[in-house]
Image (cartoon, rainbow, N blue to C red):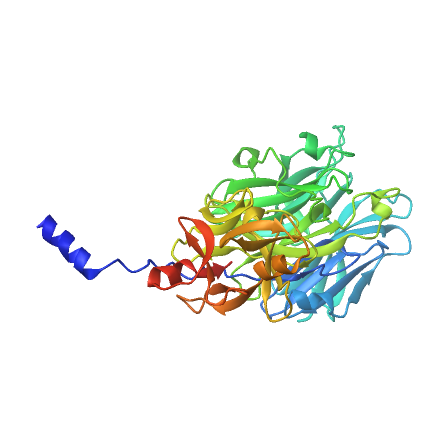
Length: 473
């Protein structure tokens, strides 16, 4: 019987190429920066179809809002001042890190501010807005969020897990010789915490204590039954970076033991892409609701003259947040200015992505670092109507074919390189929802994987066409 089955299989010919499902999270791209001179950015996607954006202005004197139906649209959206600092007393200096939230039918903006008699008496405050559009809403001051001490406190953010609303923030413990720790408490209403706050993180690692001993700017995202809290560490210059806390969504979040802390930063400066001091992030979602988006600020240069707080050039930026096989977020690197990169998964090997390894292009699962599998699809080096694929972590390096093998190499400026690194973007040969890349200078030859290595060949079988089809993610 086994022999007959084997014979029947041979007579039927080769098995058709396996088909991978269209990815749940297709590619989204944006062009950075989203906003110049806007730090500590917070973007909130509301049920009305608008994105609402607020951030610290370099004058530290007011709270501004923008709205647009797309994330990119925020870059040109009109900006409205919804609140201005007091002329004296509290809330009159250092207006920092506003966040906008919609809770129980009303708008709330959380922010930090100092006082006339002490600009460093930073405390957390809340505004409440009534009206469908927060840019034209009526705003009232709900006052200070009272924490466990009257000490330096800022960067309040709120989130809900299993029906319970929490507030996370940064505060200085007066009994400890550092700057700020991360705290968490339940809320009884949008401007009041209850119970004893729990300290989730204190700056102890070397990367958390450069310049200042800082944990601040908590931001929460939930995925796969877990709660992830990113936070910013160290001084606000090029040493600024992101750390990460995580807990099970079913755990007691007010028990510090429920949380684990990454021993290394998850998002740091990158000289290759000219991005320095990435931090104070928030999270939002793409227009189609299928991708998580990382929102953050950084600078385009490393060296700062004087106090970084007086340097106005932190810019708001966005890029797609990816997820590892184990369910943890993969922040990657702060990508270069301009269009954000994409990843390309194999049509017939869903878990494998195009990547470079020792400059050879191949497909592989579990790519680490993430940026090895990210490419910017830019105007072709030979001109418009074509595309070239530029490495995310090696700007100026492109996928090109050489002896019909695909390599990642630096653009040498020659016409031959430009031709070898240019492709026609086509609908996927095995699935029009995918993409295939036809060689610019060898018509009919497509980039495909063969024994997991990328080559440029003319497809003639169903398997060939499947190997030449990719999904952008």
